Length: 114
Length: 111
Image (cartoon, each protein chain N blue to C red):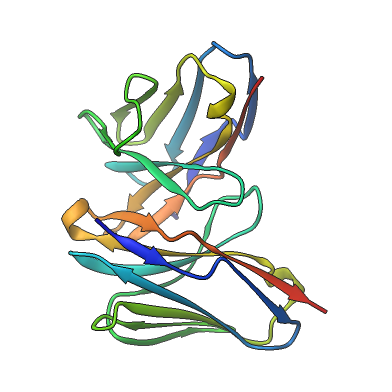
């Protein structure tokens, strides 16, 4: 149980375009999802917390107009990187809170902006 | 805010034991997690401590002292496949129970 499916696994896009990353909870309802970004040889940095049906809470320094988060249902949260630039190239991972203390991670999305 | 510290890199020999330490400071401590992460992959759950003491799971054990803000992950009978990053993460009830990760410890296991 508690599987989170994240797509795509990797994506290459041109600078200035937008990319959408999806995370779906397959066998449970995820009222809260966390979005992380990880640069090479660094740890996971929390970008935002999304709660189903409400606006996401962004961490300091994360532009909410650039990283659009939508959590419209209990099984789906999306992160859209708008007007992507090469510095946005990173590994993006979602995580869902499951049964009080269980955190289940998606498989991650490797974004490369060229 | 939170401050989570762990060594950046460690090296150990196959078959040996290694201990990875983690210290933390948080206002609303509500559990400490250890994850293993191989390069390019998502973290995988190793252990969870919320009470003081030692939790053992096969070759992996994790210890917590809440009064000292200290935890360690102990890996026994090291195997080459244990070469990975090990992430210490703390949950804070004062921050919506979100997880904050330490910088990670890159462990290299040598023959």
